[in-house]
Image 1 (cartoon, rainbow, N blue to C red):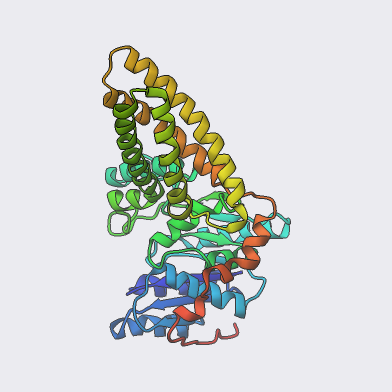
Image 2: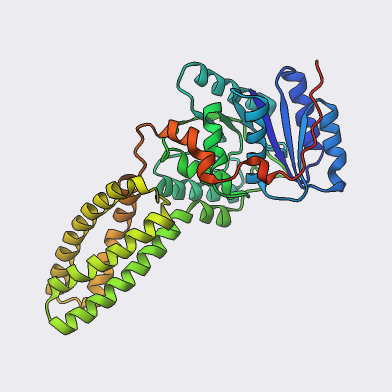
Length: 379
């Protein structure tokens, strides 16, 4: 395996980490990506290079996601078939935890069942800053709803990557911190398995998670939910406007509900397919459209039942519409995420691994303007 550390304007913590790794695991290559830190931090990278690490460099800052992709591309070309362990440069991860995650990743590969190993802190334990505990709790809840699976530490940068997964990682969107969230949000949906390894919670400058911003990062995790809500709101506006017009013109409630829903559902399907869930492969169109039609039919039946019952009870038409749509919103999102636009997992790993760089249209080399390499010295 190799250890990959993206770094932007690092301090002596990076030098200490690389030095400790070279002592504890002298045979493991270390790759550090300087993400445009500038001349003021050149001495730090000179130090880690003198310790035997390979240093790759961006001319200007491009973001953590871009730095990780640069490292993944280098790993695939310089260390084919090797697992990669990513670690942060700020001292958040101990040497023991990095090596434990690496050992678990290699063991999974050797067993024939490669998984992405996630080093997870106990972010909810007593003693952690209240800001971090509340923020991480919100992030976990939002992640569970958005991704469809539970992860105890959604902010972890300590990850063990099997070699078969690297091409898929190169294809994932995002150049900055959102990249790591995109990977987590999409890995299970694309057929990749994960497992957690408990790691130590390290305090940096009095905060157990110095880069974590509860509001911003929780919103970032919830981007799929926000997009779905926007799409649903737009479809709701189309549906409601047509319903009010058709009801006023025809005086027939149920036919107006059906006609308005057919139009709004078509709009919603197109937006969700191309924007929210990004499942726009031509081969899956018929399957997705069939599943969406079945879901839309079921929701339409529920919509008719709720609207008829509420209006019969004396509730105004617009109020009944609002109550009905609110009740069906979460159900619609969960089913669309998991069933309608969920990837067919049969063969998905192989397809992802082979074709991911082609779908992305660009590899790590296109993002790396300058590469400076200091060969690892023989121990």
